[in-house]
Length: 107
Image (tube, rainbow, N blue to C red; front, side, top):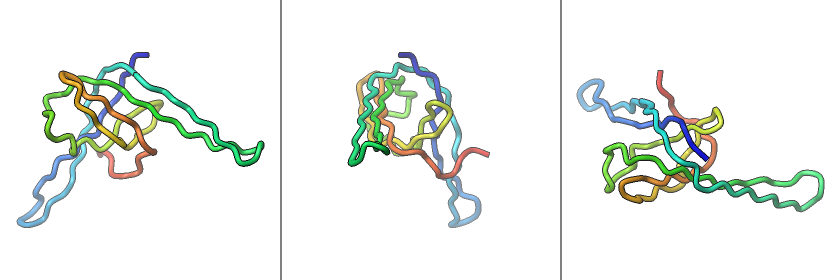
């Protein structure tokens, strides 16, 4: 399945001497959805707990294989998701989605 979305990339900007602020920009990326696993666990038959694992492979964006800590989230299905894991697969990067992201967003 094809993927089109945005990555939230953070950059620390000095706003005044000794004061740093995170600024987030979104970068559009194209890729391929590689993994979609859904697990339904139910202790009762009425309300099952659903968890899922998604991964997407995108181009490395020139960010470099050594540090992806500036990627804070990825978008999927109209929502922003944290990244539970990032794996280098040169020349690509595999992003594993975690929970819904509730941090700062671009203005």
